[in-house]
Amino acid sequence: KAGVVTIPIVVHVLYSTTAMNISDAQIASQIKVLNDDFRKLNADFSTVVPFVFQGVAADMELAFCLATKKPDGSATSGVERKSVTSNFNFDDNYYTSSGLPSWDTTKYLNIWVGNISADYLGWAYLPDNAGGTDDGLAIGYKYFGTTGTVVSPYNKGRTATHEIGHYFGLNHIWGDEENSCGTSAGNDGCADTPATKEPYYGAPTFPTNLYACTTSTNGSMFMNYMDYVNDNKMAMFTNNQKTITQNTMAGPRASLLN
Ligand code: ARG
Ligand code: ZN
Ligand code: CA
Image 1 (cartoon, rainbow, N blue to C red):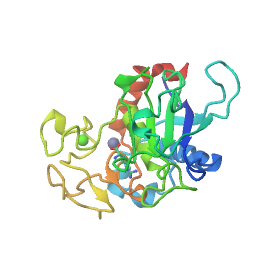
Image 2: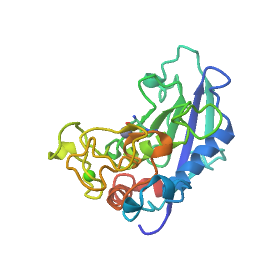
Image 3: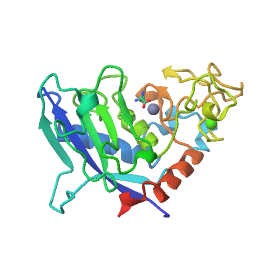
Image 4: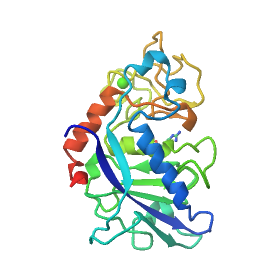
């Protein structure tokens, strides 16, 4: 399918304090980040992405909106909210009847926001889970959007950008397995993201070959959304990543456009 396509999102907010009941403005700030990042319209692109990598950066041609219709056809804001007890186990139960069950995951990108355990910023299901009742993203309320309850250095909405990368089939730059340079498990299937053996964190200085599989002049593309650097240090997807995403949209996630 050619051109920009728009993915309908439903945000399920599970809160046990008033602060955790994030505002509509905070949710809107996340949707804006997605619409910037997946169209290469992010304002930090030219400052965060070194010139030598700008040429392989992609406009992913994906847009996002809050759903305007529920599965039954009635009107919605695309956001639903539920109060849960302070001992609610978000990680295990967010999509169950004690949390907020998904809306048809073949038609909506479901995003749950709540009190995720300290081990995570968020997670996502890969395209092989398309149609599953738990399919979609789970994101901590401190890492969703750019205003309200967000906490630095994960306050630029890039956790959802990264997780939606996974949702459309993208892997981390270093692949499924760390320290596996030269094996299929040790890379992301993208020739235009230089191979690395493990994640970069924080705020690396360009150029670096610290975790590169092979030393090169430009070094690692740590500023790719599919690495682990701080939100204000990641600012690009590549053309090869776009190809994977488009194959997913033409395949396992095609029903999102119906
Ligand atoms: N650790 C998470 C994952 O592997 C997300 C990391 C996102 N990084 C960020 N700067 N927001 O899916
Ligand atoms: Zn990830
Ligand atoms: Ca690669």
